[in-house]
Image (cartoon, rainbow, N blue to C red; front, side):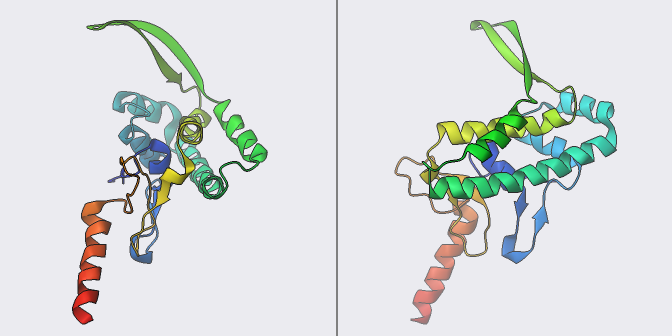
Amino acid sequence: MNHVLLGGHPAIDFLNTSLAPDGEPVEKIPDGKSYLTWLTAVGLLDAARASKLSRRFGTEALDAAAAEARRTREWARAFLVRWRARPNGNYDEEIGTLNKLLARDVHSSAVHATEQGLSVIESPQIANTEALVALVAGQIAALITTEQPSLVRECAGSACTLWFLDRTKAHRRMFCSASVCGNRAKVAAFRERQRS
């Protein structure tokens, strides 16, 4: 399954796992296998580890994790809509929910020798499938604590439901993809001018 990775941040790409191009709903994490594939695609797991987790947990447990991830995604979408509209609002309840998800996240640290010298590498310990949802919660936490709410945007494309983080210098990005939605908007504007 091809994943849409246009958001500029794993938390935004997570929201974009549910999309509706031209009004047709598409679910990109319908089951546990596709959830592991998505976690690998955004760099939250490596392929070898995802394969081991797939064998270790089994289909039923991973499908349950995917279902929880979908519920978390819709909760996060509603939260981020409010956060964008009122950045300084009171989000005690949402932060409490997010902290509960983050509490599932356990990391281990190890020192590794690299060509540049010694470095500490942290890796998540996935003791159960709940920790797979904690990986995404960590990205949501990173988004709301390090990014400006005004730069989290929805695509201006008329039939697009994707979100993105505007990291352009002038902060004028309007579309999830200049080559797709941006091009469609240019063609539509050109046709409108031709009609006038």
